[in-house]
Structures are given as structure tokens and as C-alpha cells.
Image 1: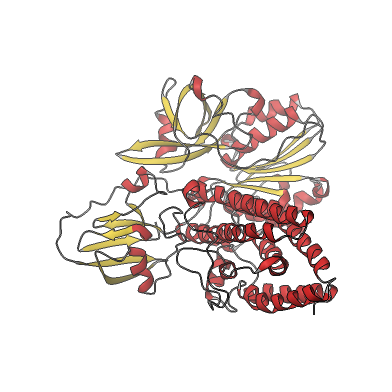
Image 2: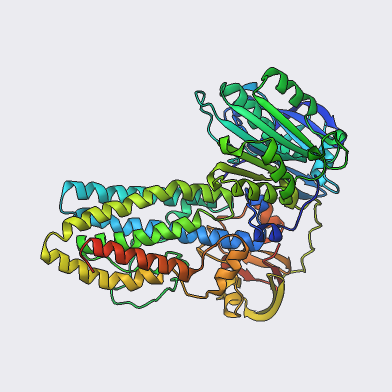
Length: 251
Length: 358
């Protein structure tokens, strides 16, 4: 059984790689980039949410916020460990950016990365209080569920397995957010604040799905690192969001 | 970062004409480090003609056996595997990193599971470790192995597998598929491709009852088996892959001699290859990294942290001299081979040739 095939062809046909030694150079680069984007987003998301613990209106909410901070940081650590098998310095990586740094609320950066920080652009905007944080958590949580489900199919098996473990816990973070939103809409005042926040975050979360017709997508698809185009994932999120907001009387 | 440790070769057994089974003993202080999980591999390093080569080989012993043993099949032109098959002796020392890899599922002593395994050639090595460990530690579980080889003489661990069938009577089924030998039943001759899988699953293997499938072999076989398993309703998380080392370059390459340094110009002509395309541009020797220059020249170079810690932007300097400001991600041996982190890399010579493709 010495018959083999070029690794590029194997990947294009849906093959799976299992160790750093299997990865050709371009694959290695794109895989590390994909992992860095996830790690940076989780660390930046957790850092931003950490302040929210003090804005939480009750003990249950404080626990939920603290749990989200803890678990998102843990998820970053698990993916960072996979990066470590490719040579990344895990300890230094975890502290090489100020993860709590934010731009101004009015900054307009579209979907662009900032410098060497690979966090999704939505995590560069600051949160404004409890209601605003809960709204972002729900909107981005629903997006993360769709983006992570796509990631569970990546052709690098050790990473796909980590994402499969993470997915249900991330989904739970969104469920905690929906619970909090249910309490928020009980008062007309806070319901109105939530509507304003939805107006602010909706286009910014949408931008995190990336551009339609992306050339990068084609390359990533050939490597088995992506399977569904940005625009299809975005459309799925938009449909799910309309339903969720209607259920919460927030449409 | 994982470190290398010395292992002493305490036994070498010739298994087939082209394969040896090597038993290794860690130093007294390292026993815990080499406490492996079934299905894991060891990465060895050795210097050939002054260049360090690293190769990974799967552990073939079971967890309960208390020994560390790897199978090494000779690959045509393969430097390390040829050396291990021809020159390695009992008493020699090998350098290896602690066991790595996630080609296993957790053992549950009370479970009664049905496992499938598909091995091609030396892909049997980690699967043997999994089979032995599982049958010994999960007394109510069953294993079915489909094992593809070119001919009878090239079947690794043939006797050991026969013995296992006898020890675990009724709990281990083995189907040998031989590529170039005729068999009594046609089904067991030829290659393990999609058609063969479909036929096997129709008559011999009950996929619906299977909890987990392990696949290790050459790429086309892995694709065919995985596609057929999925077609029969198996989910991705039930299928465990281990791609064996066929994609690793076999021969040690001679290092490109670097041009004498100490050149005085302030600019450098950089020749950069990425995805098979080469571009030549000028860049200053100071104030701009190689990565920045490549991006400015509209090359889609990979990068992430830009701080020298993640290694996404790694490339190889083939000619000329460069220096890195910071390096927290490349090991010494990679640096010796010419690898650089382009986000930290500045040219020293008037001309450099760099490739992101190696």
C-alpha cells in the first residue's frame, strides 16, 4: 500500500491532516491564521466582558458573566495549545496584545484587522453597560455558533476536535444571554436601550462574517479549511436573528 | 516547548523484509514523560551529513504492556527509515520527544463498544497499539480490522495479530485485503477503494453497530474509507484519522551556501516565492520587515501576530543573509536550516532569495 497522492489533491477531495508534519507551507500559514483569529477574538471578547461582571444587576447575572469570561479564556487556551504544536510560544502569545484595548464607539473599521491583532473587527468596539453587553453577547453568540459549526469541519483533525468540544459551551453562553435579555425586555426603559444596542451591533456583527465573494474563501475551501461561503453563513445568521428578536419582542 | 530525551534501544526485531520493531527504554527520570496513550507517536531527531532530520513513528505496543515500542518501515530513499532498518543496533541511543498525537478515544472499562479499524501497510502500527489496549482494557468491546497490504510477505505484525485473535477469541475479527495476490474470495483481493469498502460493508461489516472507526494508511485509502463510512451514516466525530508520514520529505537536503555577508548597500533586492509564483522587489535594509515589504508588493503572505510568537509568517532564506529582531517561535535547528519569521526579518546582504513554499 505505497500508493499515495499529492497532499493538495488529498485536501481538495476532503482529506484530513493529523499532525504539523503533514501540513504544507501555505496550509500551515492559513491554519495558524485561522487559529490566531479565533484565539484573539476569544481573548479580546473575554477581556471586554470582564468589566461587565461589575455592571451585572444581580448575582445570577454576575455568575453568568464571570462564567462567560472564564470559558472563553479557556477556549482560547485550548486552540492556543494547538498553535503551540506548530511552534507558537503559547505563554508569550497569551500576553502579547492588550486584549482589553478598544477603539472608540464611533470608529469605522468595517471588517478590517488592526495591525497584528487578528481579533474579528467587532471586538475592537467598546461595550456600554450591562444591556449593551448582553445584546452583543446574544448577537455575536448566535454568529459564533454558525461560524464555529463551520469550523468543526476544518481539515485539521486536532483543531476540529477542539472546536467540537467548544461549540456546545459557546452555545450555552448565548442561551445565558437570551435569558438575560428576557429580563431586560420586561421593562420598557431597558427594552428601548436594548433596541438601540441592537441597531449599533447588528451591522458590526454582520461584518464579522467577512466579505461576499471573498477570494480568500476559494483558497481556504481548496485546503479544506472552509466549506460554506461567507454570504451563506451571514444569511443563516440573519434569518435566525430575526426569529430570535421576534421571540423577544425586540423586532 | 517539548524537549528531546535519550532513549536506549533494548531490542530490535525484524518484522518483515522492510520493517523493524524497536523497543526503547527511557532513562529512569523520564519514565513518566514517556507514559504514552495508545495510538500516539514519537518524534525522533538525528543528524545526517550535518543536517538534522526529524521523523515521527507510531508506537505499536499497548498501554498495559509496559514497554515503549515503535515500528519503522523502510521507505524508498528515506534517510531515517533506511538507517533504522540497516544500521541501528541494540545499545544505541535515540533522541525523541515525549509521545504526541490524539489518534485514540478514551478507554472506558465498562463499555461494550464496536470498533472498526482500517490500516494500510505500516498504518497498522498505531492501530495495533489501539487494538491491544482496547481489547485488554475494555473486556466487553469488539474490534474489526480491515488490513490492506501489497502481498503476504509485506504484512507487518502478522503473527502478533494472529495471536491476538486467539487470545481474544470472538472479540477480534481481521480481514486481510491483498493487492497483488489472488485470494479464495475476490473481495479480499485488490485495493481498498470506494467499491471495495461498499462491498465489505454490505456483507462483512455492520457499520450501524459501530461506535468509532480508526483509519491510518495512504491518502487515497483514507479518502475512500472515510467517504464510504460517511455515506453509511457515520458522523465526523466518530471517525478518527492518522495520516501517516508519506508527505514527509525523505532525504536530507544539502544546505544552500550563503553568500558572504558584510555588504554595504542600504537597499536589498529581494526575490520572494509564494504559492509557486516568484516576485522580485527592492526593499530597504532597515525600517521595514521582509513581511511588510512582501505585503507592500501585494504578495498574499501569511501572518498573524507580527510579534515573533505565532510562527504563521515562517519562510526560508535560500540565499543571502538576514537577521531576526525577535524569535520566540522557531527552534534552533529550523534557524540553522534557514527558516525565519518574516515579520521580524531584515536583510543584511544586497540580495536575498526567500521562499514561503518550503
